[in-house]
Length: 429
Image (cartoon, rainbow, N blue to C red; front, side, top):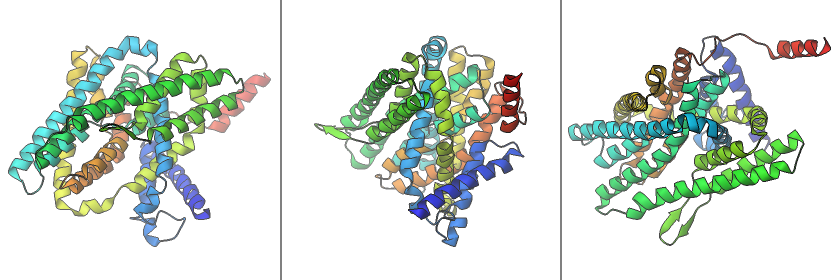
């Protein structure tokens, strides 16, 4: 137990120290945390095999999966705050249209490119793997995007639309992956499961939204019973942890396997709560401060999980490079086309696609399912490689896009002690 606590403390401190280094060269804090994770991971300091001083193996990192899943739940709950009725009235239709179109266009483009690669080099990638990777390409990571927005206090039409599109991306990605994985399985086995391709993903989305709505509604009722800010925040924390726990459960209704999406459950809970609770904005602000250390650990642990051994496989590198280029083109072109179709501003048309490049947790979950294919190991390795690239480069590209769109104010060096001192001086005067 003491080793676990020392290891977590060491990881948190390394992430914070690394953020001071990257700040000097203008990189987002998210990138710093990921780099810190790589540094103390099993391929660098972890190789020293000193318990508590880095993670000695990938298995050690995976021991903290409950922490990373909970952190992802808080991030999803915070994104639900963007779906306020006022925002939905102004750009809800645009967000839904862009969220669906850019994901479908990305999947189609990656499918075409990888199927062409299969035709040219059938020994490198199978047809079933090409189809599956196309669907995985649609997924976008909400965590890195939200952290960049929070760090630089980005605000504006692009930022608000981006957070809504990222949230919608998860639901669209689930449907696309289920359909594509069903086709891939049919290619290998010769039989198609309608339940697996159509019914189960729709059931997962509906059940997740219903569960999230119930939790958000019950949280609002419970909040009314308390007046203390600390107790209300504790209730919100309990609700998110409960949502994370329930979303990990699954059951069967006849032949249908029923499960939940952790992201969708918490996003829906956040959406319902923020729309019906009058004090939600203040509570969300306090919750953000409370979860800051957990979010840092989330990215440090994510960095430690990045498997560098995949870089030694030439086939993975080839497919990975093709996948990254085609996915990036799909996201950028798909976002441009769909935002133009919905009459968004030129700034959104130009910059939205780049901000949708980060990819992590959802894609890795899909890749884990894809290991059931004959060469599913290749699919997982390619996704791991893309996550390595996108997680390290994506946050910086997101920052630059938001900066170019004028939604990040010119950075100023501030000191929390000085700010607090000025507040106290103001009160005294």
